[in-house]
Length: 362
Image (cartoon, rainbow, N blue to C red; front, side, top):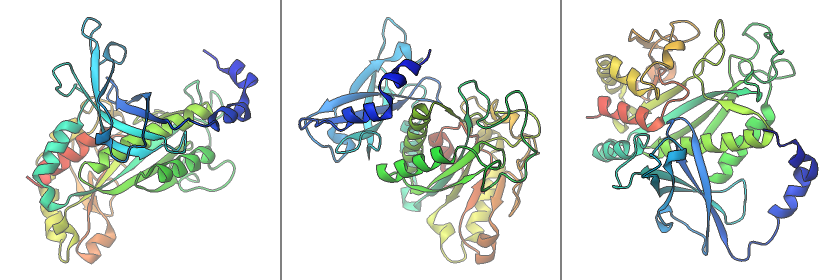
């Protein structure tokens, strides 16, 4: 399938003419939800007669779940309930994006709706004020599935000059990264920063600090915007944990976590207690940290390339080869947070944050 003809006829300037037309006092709201893969978003747009200020003001809608892997054809309707509202950087103006939960005909969460159980868990420990920050790594690919800027059928120079790199031959795709960064800021997503990663064409953005369910909401919407911006650029943002086999870094979604107790003076014992609890539930966390219960992450967590071994729990101060890293500054200050380096780049952040508080807070 090609869009060359459309681009030839309209081009960006031609499309812009239509985007600037008056909307006749109507507002476009793009409903976004997680599909049956548990890794990708779907979306469709509804016209409303007002500018919503809260997700709860918008109606429950539905879609054909048999086309997203979430229902069968003879009972295909899946309901989507708005839960988190954002400004729309794609359409601008009063238009909105709304993240939705998906429910079956009995109004029970579908299999890939991990938000429902996460929300229930967050409510149980909200007095501990759990904060999260997730470092989302991803790889930019051409439409042929090969990393952007790599010589076709070959490889660039070995890893070394690319991490936080600057200049031609060291980084590729910065225009997309900057567009995504600005779009997230406009939308109201809590994006904390970006950087080029160790493998060329690989990047990272960070979401947080967020309290409770907000981490999953904001990361999913940031992923959606990244996919849409790459769509317009004619490339792909891959969340594959090991997009290129061999001596190349994989992609993760490191989860930074703390409770109010950990952040207070002399909070280090609380951090160390959480690490001890995590050590006793390693297998549970591995299952929760990628949508295929560890099978995707197994290609990444080899014990090489700044990862821990998937079969072994480890922890250390400033050690990026461990399952859990306590930052050097937190060790020195005797308070702060811990970093769980095990989540895969294609993890569901609701599952990751739910697992973290289930183990550390309950």
